[in-house]
Length: 320
Ligand code: NAD
Image (tube, rainbow, N blue to C red; front, side, top):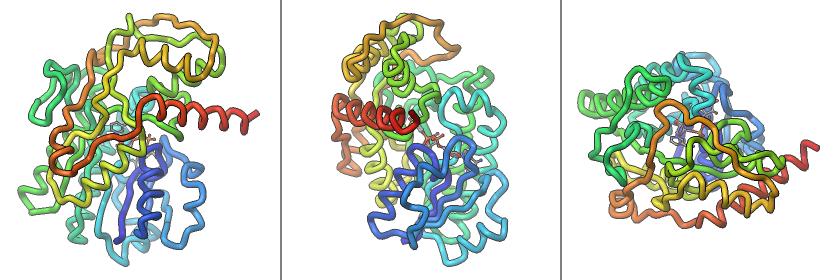
């Protein structure tokens, strides 16, 4: 099996590459390193079945080096390339729109050309600030098309529409997964997402900054579980959209308290203003994934958090 992983040098993508290589696949990782890093690829870089090429998916795959890497054939395209955290997509709004539109188009064309399956990594953000709870795949969402977060939300919604369009118009073997908040090792400590932000603050003895009163909820999935689900979905041939995430719902306040406990920090919490369009609730209904894939998350929040804290600790020791 030859897989192309766009965005493969990122937090989720690098874990996807590792699991694929460990399962005996060949992997071509295409990434422009906008928010990822080759450091995430660790031992993979010298592996004979692994190839990394610097590539902006919005520009297509026509460069000589990328074309050469793709020439032996492609069975699966996992399209993950996109800034994903609010800090990143607000800093790179046009690049985010390009990755979801031109980048998704290029990935779909690549899959079509090779008669490969394409899996689009979409997001729970397509539900916006949801009025249906937990979110099921048939809910159409409550999204602003012009607010600051729209560059991400609408780019993913357009990517979904384009993917569904290719399936209808060209019969391309496509699948759409909607990933809910995922956390774990290799998140960047300043990417603005709730877990790395709190862990960094707790380890530094700084106050944990809770947006608003902290009663908004997040449902956090450990990265290994998510990647298992993503690859099961890739194998299934299911068109999606399919939610992947952990339905264990926590308030942001509770996440902060748990991080303080897990780090043994003496940090306190402090309240800051909530960002515009910050969703009030997030919880996946994963009935479809359970039924179709037999998949459900296995790593409990306390265990995943402990592994994540220990990774951040080892990194800060390495940097010292
Ligand atoms: P990340 O920022 O760590 O990884 C994204 C990767 O894509 C990075 O390596 C980045 O350099 C690369 N990239 C960005 N634009 C690119 C471009 N134009 N061309 C080539 N590479 C490009 O983020 P992540 O958390 O690993 O997210 C991976 C995917 O999963 C994204 O598509 C994201 O929208 C989706 N997702 C993630 C989560 C989550 O909680 N982590 C939730 C929902 C959806």
